[in-house]
Length: 94
Image (cartoon, rainbow, N blue to C red; front, side):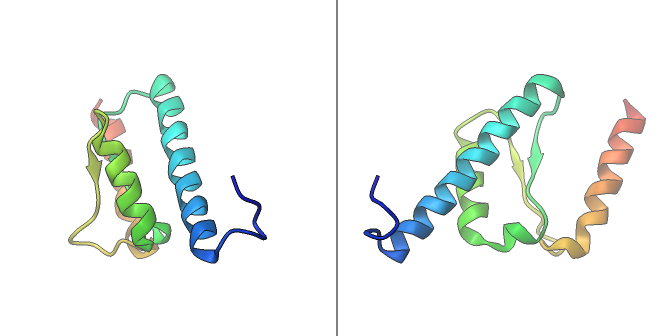
């Protein structure tokens, strides 16, 4: 790996996004060992970043974890309460 001084900004940005995607993937795998879930939702302001959103969706598509991305609600934090309500309801019905 090149030092930050010799990498172009584009390479540094690509490395940054790749490391975030891989970290989120690894954390999801750890969570699956503890919690039983069948799919994952990508929501919140961070997923307005197309590189992160598409990169994680692609990473999960390579596994058995379906990804849900809001289409009728805003992707940003304005709709975060909808996810909280969904989680609460799913726990009540189990």
